[in-house]
Every structure is written in structure tokens, then in C-alpha cells.
Length: 294
Image 1 (cartoon, rainbow, N blue to C red):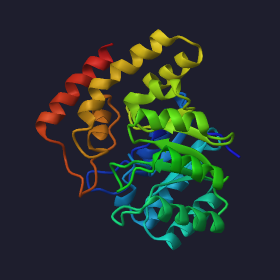
Image 2 (spheres, one colour):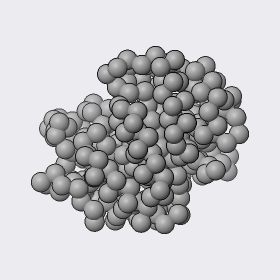
Image 3 (cartoon, rainbow, N blue to C red):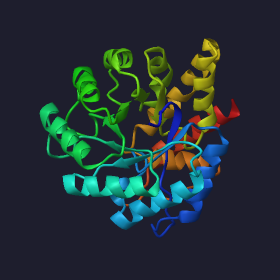
């Protein structure tokens, strides 16, 4: 079974100014990420506007990604569809196309509790052989799964190969990082907590800021691996001001704006995600330009 570790880019989905899916830019950006040395690709995740795509478009993103990646790194595909039957259908379709794993959260709006989500995991696991990544993101759904539940799920369902932890709760990161069995890795989802998570037992992260500047995050990871803690800390601290600004708007509005700063635009976000305020845009440009200047 595939192992997820290192820097996994949470990919943006590019659109034209008319909001159509831009296949060519997606392919170019995927290749850019691979050449930058990332360890995995996550599409249709928290940065990928998957809920703004129709089913045909989602599968097209998977097709393009598999065609470009060609097995060089694992491909994680986000699935935030709230219907069990559609989740299973999607899982089986993307497994056939060549996806490495599917990432899921408790369904939004329904206010799942830990037991309800466990039942969903059980039923999905009975109907597909595709490995799963749990995405604990309480800011996006109604529940913080918590360390105890996450560890229980992983021990019960051997098809879970990763946990993307985005709760921001350090004690849960530490507890999960020390308790996960072999074959399942902890992956941080909050970019400015990447280094502390590595120190707490994480094997990597699925991160949005890898879109505009993947090498900062790969440098954090490689420096940590070689015990160059000072460099890792300096790189981690350098992105905190930018990430604070990115958090002012819904994901991925200001990540797409950051792509404009680095000269690799990926178009607008699809409504109902709209342009950032002028104040936020100016603040982002200022911090991004300072970061690029070193």
C-alpha cells in the first residue's frame, strides 16, 4: 500500500476568466510541482474547489492529474460529497483511473458525531478497496474528531493510510503522531504548524502554500530530516505572516491571489467564492513580495 509522507501539495483548480476548467494550466502546474520536488499531489481537496465542480469536471481533474503524474508520486483525491452512494461510486471510479487514495471528512451540514462518521467509514470500507485519508477539519464541518476517535478509526479500518489533521490542537497532533500504527501517517493540514507537527510525529503535510511556493515547504521538510533545525525553523517562521493574511478570506481565494504574485496565475475562484477585498489583496502582495525577496 502507498505511503504518504513529505510535502503533498493541496492543488488549486484553475479556471478561465469565464470560469471554465483550464486543463492546460492544470497540467502545467502539476508538472511545476513535480519538478519542484514535492512528494505527493492532492487534488479536489481543501484548496481545490471540489464542491464548485460538477461530477464530470471532478473526474476530468483526476484524468489530467493521473496523465501528468504518471506514477511519480502518490495522488490523493478529495471527496466532500455528502451522499454515501456517490462517495462509493466516486471512489471506485477514481481508483480505476489511478488515484492512490481518497480523502474524506464528516459530511457538512448534517452535524455528524463520532459514531455516525464511524458508520460512514465502515460502509465505505465495505464497498471500495481504495485507501482512505481522514481529513479532520472542524472549521469546515461540525465536529472535531479528536485524537481518541481518530486513533480508534485507524485501528479499526486498515484501509486508512493517512490522517490530515487541521484542528490546530497541538495536543491532538502529539497524541495522534505517537499512536498511529504502521501503514498510516499523520499529515499536517495547517501550513504554519508544519514544523511543530513534524516534531510531534507527523510524516508530512497536505498544504495549500505549496501551490505558490513549494520549495519553502520542501526545505522545511528536508532540513528537519537532516537535523538542520535552525533552517527549518527560519523557513517555518517566514511563512506565518502570509498564512495569517490568507486566512482572512475563505479558501482558496487568497491562495489564488498568491499565484498571481509569483507569476503563475490560475484564474479566479468560482462563485460563490468571490474576489478578495482590496485591503486583503494589498496586504497579501506586501507580505508575498517580502517573502520572495528573502
